[in-house]
Image 1 (cartoon, rainbow, N blue to C red):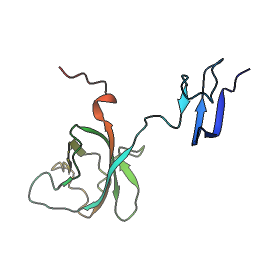
Image 2: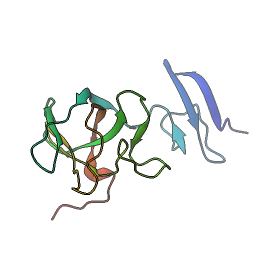
Image 3: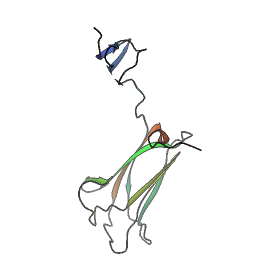
Image 4: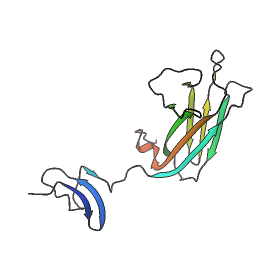
Length: 151
């Protein structure tokens, strides 16, 4: 009978490891269905910033930041919240858009740069206060998550 799951020390490392039937979880050279030692999301850089109203055009909120380049387009995640309530509403939560919590946000991640903007349609002037943006840039390549195959 084999040990299919281990939670603890294996060859000097703390692991949670699960293997298929008939495969010993303590043998690190064998295949597994899950291992906490695997190549999962690894944080490269975190950006926490306020984004304030700029006015004067339709994109009233727009800002960019830089981070140490990796040589490829990294995978990233963004959340935007209203500064006074801290309710994360982008990516869109279940509530409909309001003047304070609009769903007109966009963002773009490049190697070493990230941009965030809010389109402010003329018929929805919206909130003119400050939003809080958190962007987590991972060391993992974006093309390994979206199924992109370079030409």
